[in-house]
Length: 120
Image (cartoon, rainbow, N blue to C red):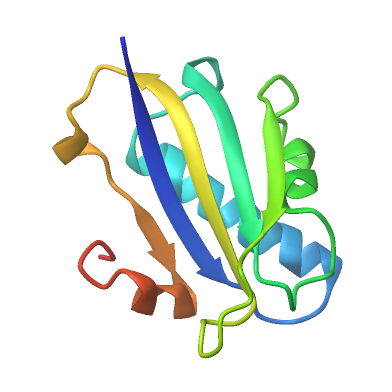
């Protein structure tokens, strides 16, 4: 097995905690399904949130969807003028039998502008 990194991002819409969790879970679900990643293959997940998001820890959304055995960590993005607001970024590490070129990185909603070359 080889360790591969999967990236994703979503711009959060709304202030409701349930909607916030649903958006993060949608992103994780897309990242895992598009790359055929099982929980057993996951090594760890790093979440970052822009400083304007104070609804809850992104990792709490992952735990709520059943990722209880995977090490998770949250951090705050750098506060850069002009940066895309209300954005959650994810960097997941997994043991996969795929080349880097075969990995699909997922950018949803307004976050598509971060990497239009990777967004589909």
